Image (cartoon, rainbow, N blue to C red):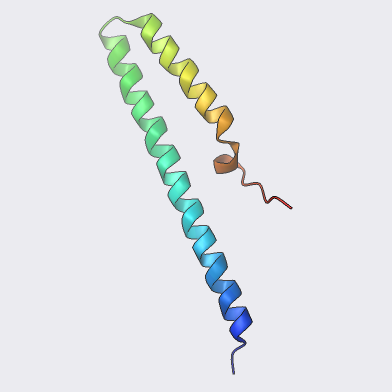
Length: 74
């Protein structure tokens, strides 16, 4: 017989991992879009706009440390 508590714990862990993957995918997509937008700005000769976009991206990266290195709160 299987322990219902162990099954619940496994299901909870699977749900947590799925949510973590979804966050990581959204994070990656946003950064990829920033790269596309920066390239477009540079190609159009808008260097200052591109620099501003890169600064925003750095702020986004800095604020999203839980995606890069998950933190388990106590």
